[in-house]
Image (tube, rainbow, N blue to C red; front, side, top):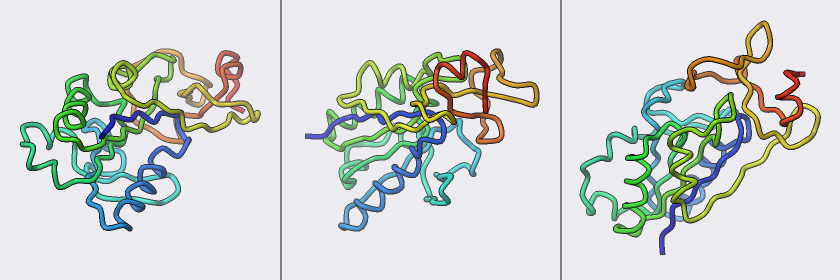
Length: 186
């Protein structure tokens, strides 16, 4: 029986790398994989999932699957979604429908919280309805478990601003709660 999975972690936890590894394992055994990317994420090109490790694969935008019939999804062994935190509640509910009505497993990878430690819309919905929730862990510069996505600039940690600002290591660092609260990025 298919399930809806949410695999979350802070920035730099290798979520996209795990997605691409999962894609490879399925395809290596001859199974058909659909890769999706949240429409809001255009950092690496509209239809590319790219890991900091250098792995990449083509993907479709999540919006492209709306209105598709059961026959469209039935040929797939699994659906993998990158940057799921940027998905809407409606999009997450569509993933649940694909799991429940079409019996295709969906694994969503993404951040749980933003730079202010508030849930993203897509992550909130996944925490509410996913069948399986697991954390992909990484560490702070001090060696403790990183749980915060700190946005920073030349003046230090940024505490206010728009929830969504696309960036990578040049604007974000993963920290433990202690160093996030202390404003210590190194």
